[in-house]
Image (tube, rainbow, N blue to C red; front, side, top):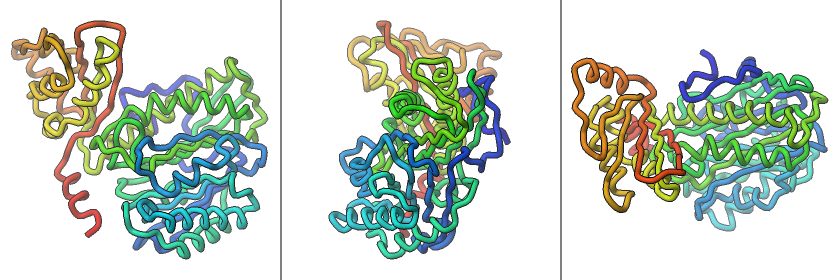
Length: 409
């Protein structure tokens, strides 16, 4: 199976897929089972061997955040050398004890790796509330640091919770000045909403660049990827994106250069495809919708989110139901003024000026085929002009209800 498998993400011509467990040159990672989960890898460490490497970071915008986010926000986010990640507990809602656990895990990594503590980023995922066992976590960090290797297989698996499998990639990128590698490991399946998700994404590149360049590229690409997805409209406490550049390729990416443009295109495609894999996972998702909304700038975002997060739209998507009155209803509840909108489904006009468009037999067959695909595109045109946005969203399945009804039992 190829990495770039979504109709909405184009593989750049200068990007080549490598073995997905690969990792950019100059990086190592390792993971162990520390007992935070009943079985499977659950604590991992990622290291940039270059002490002069640079980084960038993004975190959840939820007011309720986990201790790892609290601690990591105070780190040297432009110069992170290592990352500690775990599943089996989000370390959220544990108060001062949770912060103490996060700090202790960071100190364990610093000692084991020989890295300054404020150059280590943290990421924890799992149930919100229960105390994360400090001793198990710290022992796991120390053990993982002794198992560092030249691929990301174990690391990409230690962060999984309800995911149906690892989400990872390694790409070779042909820049005008030379070839570099981009690798990434991500997780996420539920508690996913625009403005990130219950998701992690760790990106590594062996390109050489300034921290400001990596910060710019990270910000732009996150806005076009993880900021555009929704599974259930729920904003997580723990969303974390770390990008790191080590320079082992010897290829320098200067600001505002052709190299920066080409690397940015590759990073954008990488993050968008990882975001698509999160939405396709969706804790039992059968298909994914893309809602594009055009119209007055202040109107498009609320309407897109209203459609993407509507349980009625999502269940119709799951059942391949052609009842697009649900899309119009969800759009209308986020609008003001007269309801004069057009709706297209995969290029077929099904509503004009807010009213249903009669379809002939051939058009009906075309619509049925479109809604039964694993990716369904809808375009809403509102009054006004100058604004456009998109949100990618999962359907709502029986399995999603089962998983979340039994998550802690």
